Amino acid sequence: MSRPVVGIIGNSYLLNEQYPVHAGGQMNSDAIAEVSGCVPMIIPADPRHVSVAELMDICDGFLLTGGRPNVHPEEYGEAETEAHGAFDRARDAIALPLVRACVERGQPFLGICRGFQEVNVAMGGTLYPEIRELPGRMNHRMPPDGTLEEKFELRHDVTFTEGGVFHELMGSQVVRTNTLHGQGIKHAGARIVVDGHAEDGTPEAIYVQGAAGFTLAVQWHPEWNAAGDKVSRPLFASFGDAVRAWAARDTAPALKAV
Image (cartoon, rainbow, N blue to C red; front, side, top):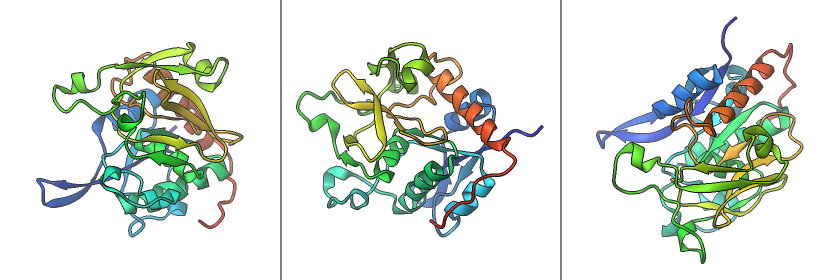
């Protein structure tokens, strides 16, 4: 029996500062292949190349990855400022309607960092452009120097809602995670349940209330050491179970035009 396919949302980069590419981190593919037990397939997130409907027919589930560009503030009704950073409007045009279509259809996705923020914005939520500038908040950004091990070091605790979805999944109410983001949730979107917070109150774990499929998203980067980390492994394993369950369906619900 063939493994189900997980579409990994790619990011646009310039290779050697001049050659445009769509790329995805190897650790994302490793986590999907080795822990989720699925086939990882990098998606060129650009509506010139793919449509949401095509992707949902080809893939059984989706990994909404992290990335340096941020969701454009126009997507949540705010004006662009220097603090909002770089953008990828092509990815916005694929990822945001893809989230809404998956929620509607019950197709599974897992959101990471920017993907976490995409889930919130897709459901009508808003974002802070820079968490570290808020009173009482810590600096959640990736350390500018050091090895990968140092940059992805576990740096703060996340506390889940007692008896909530993440508490049940992890088997613990408090876990230790890395942190490599600048933006974060300002207002939660419709049906978005904030199920975990960092020590400074920053939302770190969400899901879509009442959705038929797997809709978990986290602000940290669980793809780092996914096979060996006691927090990352159950997240990717449960996502893989949800993708296999979707793939095993005899028929998928019809998808409305998006």
